[in-house]
Length: 184
Image: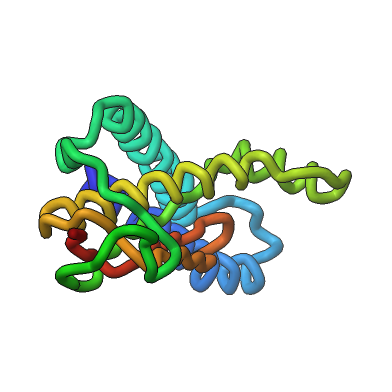
């Protein structure tokens, strides 16, 4: 699927390059003759076809991703790992520090939700599309961190911190990290 998406992206870029850097000068020089040459038609079809292929592959990937999200994670631990944002556990003693654990993910909303969020941004109110996106990202990243801590044999993760970064457009990266420890 990824290869097909790259082919579509390549066709789009090739068509766009041809239309802009060859088609525009051609049009300026031969503006009195409105007949569109065959290579310009191919460039336009590459642009449109590339967009169509990329959108179709993204839709198929989204469909398979949604199906996989509904299944439980295989890496989820059987026992629960305690998460704390402090380094002190009342009544418990840390007997071993296992090391840094982390989980991260990059989430984005699809264009339809992005457009509705823009309207809500103009009118005011909570941007529920982004709130849901960041909530899902937080749960995914936390589950990945807990799975890593469980693989290390940790009883708890202390000093848990969350960080977010805007990647591109409406995509956001969420990183959660902490120190995996064994308790008495």
